[in-house]
Length: 227
Image (cartoon, rainbow, N blue to C red):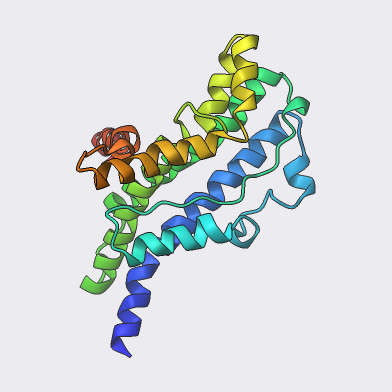
């Protein structure tokens, strides 16, 4: 019984940050879209802070669960994308940038809030202090990892949409066509290629280079400023 309770307590230090990070990330996209004139997310009930409305069975439950069970050094997940009718945004290019940046910016704000809570919260009993410290530390890292990952300049990630919005029209059209295939390319580049090269004895930690190291730099900057 104690082992079950310990497992639940340990899992909660990841589950709570994951649910907050992905829920607020997606809700922020919807709120930004409404600000720029598109109420699609609102009409579909996605302007909500209810995690159930944003949960993706694979990205929010299966992938984080597998990473947790296998003892991965980091946790990663995603929610159902909020629907946005980009042609309804006004002004369109600024609207696309605003909607795209809203999600990662929210993750950065969550990381800052977690740092401030670590600094400002009063002392509690050791078990509570340990749980809070672990949960807030993992919230900082998770949100910085999500921010760094989502700002990679590959559609349909947020960074890819920013790149599309600021690119000349011919390049923007090519990038826009990558919306449906970009995630396959990304998975192949970041996860499958290192796995295959690893089997061949070649260390190619692309995810670490592109995401973990920038996220670590972001964590250090935020801690230096707000701790």
